[in-house]
Image 1: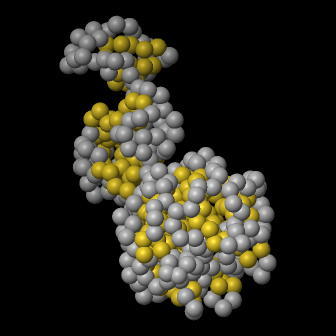
Image 2: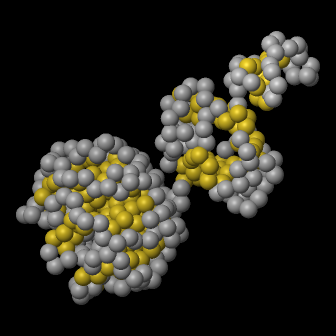
Image 3: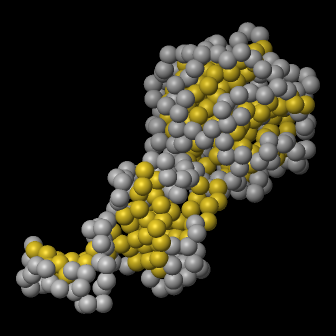
Length: 431
């Protein structure tokens, strides 16, 4: 044992520990049935677990994990809370990470100074990764292992419901490349003038709307884009409202018919809360989107006349009072996030119509002349890493054309329609 230099080896067994010093000398003795646990000079120990072969692993601080990715990649979820000095080690058991990588989900904490909106991958054969939790700013830091590869999560989108001459319930998925798919048969009550948002980091919810009368029913969307059957409504039934995500994993429905300013929060499990008293100018035909990674904004609409006021939403889901209008007042527009932390309002009832970008601080910019066919009652969603899409709507007749948005907020010309033309639909991201 004299080959261990600058470290100690703890021999555990029978409730006692035998420690070998830096020169290999036995410092204390143990009974029979001992097990060895490596301990570094700083005194930290790791308990090595059995080989992981599954596609997911929930890691615990203080453990070491051999990860065998021969058959599949493995997504590793780190602890939701951590203390300074917590350590975890992962090792490529069969030298296959280059074929099937490991993916680190930092579970709300920072990783090497980056927040949890990024996907962290390690894809080098034979690699070992030793991470230590440093502080809230930098979070988990690798102290051994190759450079991390960061890439934004690849999300997808979904358009759903609407009116195509009668109320509809079909949906159209949007790939992470911005390609709209043909109709998927409707699930849930057919309706229009509803809203949708993401929750839980990778799932979505359609809610409220009009089935012939206003309703508050909701339909959850799985991380694979599958729409579930109706969930009984919570909150005041209404339509022509908007929704967006906030706090990185929750959502909010707000405003709507009856010229309302009520809001309803959505938990990270997709549970809709009862009404929150209204803040800001009551209105309908409003739009909303996320910005800044964890905040939201409601904007524009109709309060008896067209308006351009906005209301920011904090990362705790608190709606703020009115911000004076910037840009042309209009209603029946759409909004979504882009560029990972910014937002965009576009189209709507003004003629001509305009686009207004939203900075990562929630500041709405002045009008940019809209690109693409002018229309109302459309919807928009993020897709891919940091891009977006506007789709469907009405322009004198129903349409299914779409317009892609770059990660710089530039709206592209029309893309030929796919799916049933309709308006007063909703859209959001998932996955």
